[in-house]
Length: 139
Image (cartoon, rainbow, N blue to C red; front, side, top):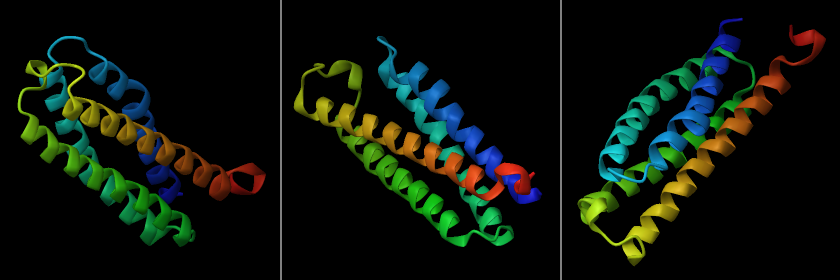
């Protein structure tokens, strides 16, 4: 029962990042630098929380393979966020760089890839929820 709550919280948090936080902060026209800093802070706090949620889920649930897949998905996002953080450090204030500058295009594409990875992780977590707890037997 507790593992279902943990996985539901993880899935709900991913939903919030993919469908609420990312679209609002990453689609701003002005102050992209400030929006990016807020988004980064949210993500790094999420990663810590998500790691512990998945660790507890791994310890409590029987589905170790699915949990490892979720952990790999999280690790990919952490790695990409770390890479983006270093790239952003090299860019400086993104509002001062031309929108079509090659480095800004690269940063934008990697940011979209990060959001896509979050979406894939979200879909995978929904699949695990349905597979593990779905149906009449899981209720």
